Length: 411
Ligand SMILES: [Zn+2]
Image (cartoon, rainbow, N blue to C red; front, side):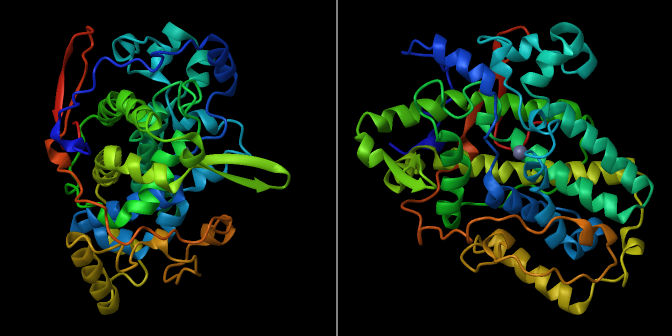
């Protein structure tokens, strides 16, 4: 039953990713691999999240962000693009929190970086991921960019903050079993965060909450991670359920390229999985922009609320830009952005019409090689579940199940 939002299977139980299988050799292999290949959200998801975040900003910030939206959206995937060339990049995108404890990982892990290093060593922290602290660091950089009224840096750090916060919203970014590799479900990562959103975007509700000031960004991002981790059990269990009814030759699609055979989940599996977890994917995709726009707003306020119109040349939003924006906002609220091909992630990359002088833009790498804009299935197979009803119960600090979140973004 696709009643994802009904809460019948929620709150997630005290899940274990290791159920039913003996995994020691695989576990050892996985420890050596730790997130080598898995990205997050795919380019499609990150770019869509970033675009929606611009729509959720207050008007005092929106003109500036809209003027630079194409650039910010494009740069939102740059942290993934540099993973191959920058060896320090990979750990910034995840935290395998269940490495630290299977039963109470959030209770064991200090929120503060120095304290975490003191308790577990810098090497261990790096190995199992640093996403909460990367978010905080990027947030501080963005605040400083606002303080310096540095347009290039504001654009860059806004884009990067969007990326890392987006990653924190993906359940599979919080577990050592990040690609299902420990439970013979390899490929689940890209199924969840790329194949599903690309295929079912037309049925998603992308209207989140307007941006709000975040008093404690580090606590907020830990809240996001804890909620993401709360979905890990279901992410695997619901795939397992489908596997029991679908033969491997239907479950997977095999492609041969350069003498290599690779396996991915088939569209048939994606369709069945979407019926089961589509509401969860939508819920995380919708929550991320709210947190991102809130952190942008927070950085701007903490950076002394500079007048962003003064950073624009020409300083005023043109009549044409205004019309375009209000057209997009209306489509967003009517949930027709993707049907009308208004998502930048759906469009073939084209030269950004640069109004302002952004020097660094010329130096940035071109839009990376990526598959042509994905074609979603024309209509959702069924209505998107009422994700607002969704409840999450996660472990409290002392190990008791006491934090209950209902919709919205944890503060
Ligand atoms: Zn990433």
